[in-house]
Length: 527
Image (cartoon, rainbow, N blue to C red; front, side, top):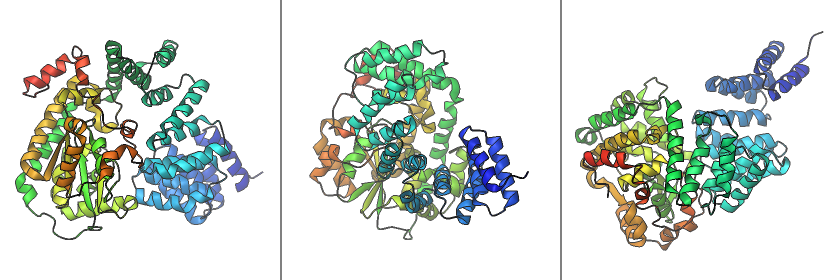
């Protein structure tokens, strides 16, 4: 007896729930053989391609499903998710705006839509979707964890803390939730530490599976000023990352060397963009520096000005550079890309970047992009945007390195998990910084983190003046800024400036002695 499309679809749906993707693929093929214009067949094919990480083929399948049946909100949200993976964020935003009001009875797709909104930097739009998902289907740990993470980005710290506590009561071995909870408040005693240590004691997982727990323990021991224990866990975390990272710091240093070689003063002075670009009425402000140097603090201060908005940390500049280079590679960035893209018309960079960013921009005269990693690309920024403001954050080298060492980062900062790699990278970064000072001269606005913290009002006035902005009192009340923040400093920026992090590294002087010597031997002043 033949099985009709409806029956085949039901078999496939059961297979999806059990993650039997071979059966899902077979059902999708059978459905499309019976009906080549079946939206369900293409939707199921899209699911198979998605779990196989074949993004382009997943996009094609979900697009076809949606083309055949525009009512398929499931295909629309799955497609938006794949667009996000491909960094096609403008299309993500457009698609979500068309379909989110059709998700009222689907907690799963409400949650996925919220996750996608968060991924493209719009957690304020994600929040009501996560709330609705949890209302429709209470007690789902994934839905609750996503709600809590979104709450942190929006400054709903107390609400998020309670959610994580509830989750850990039900799932006490969930290491990521322990880490997320530890971030939200200063530890007052060893209660949470004991809970986390018990989880580790009862686990036979290899160190690479305990990374978030190590960082959480390091953070709470540091809160309690148990410096030795804190460092031991930070070291365990870094060592665990290094054991699986397959990373060579020489690769990143080669990138810096190529940037210095290619982006020199003669290159910068040639073919500087003169034509008007899309949305040229808005001036970009790029805030850069090594991570943990105060870039988020500077962003919050400046973005509290009435003429300034922030688009947060985007990777659009890098995406455009990579795309315009035409270099075929799976790497995010490499020296070949730098050499190739240095030969293109800077108009392509500015137009491409602004096109990618269009869904985020409002009507403010200035907008901030504060991805620290953009310090590699200041030459391209200066060439593509003659009117761009560039702020570079400086911080004590030892505080900078140690603060990076104890932080979980993404692919861009793999050098931060080893103190030896950190030292080598810092020296290369310093060479690049000196190069930009020589090439960009007064276009580079230098800000000292320690001065910004200790003399906030005066330094804010100076910074705004260099940006061509009038002083506004709101810039000093940046802790009242309700704009979301998805950075590693999303908790800290909800409070006034403080000096607790200045010279913090001295508490770990013994453990950091080799790094200190490494920097000092290269002529870096660390105290």
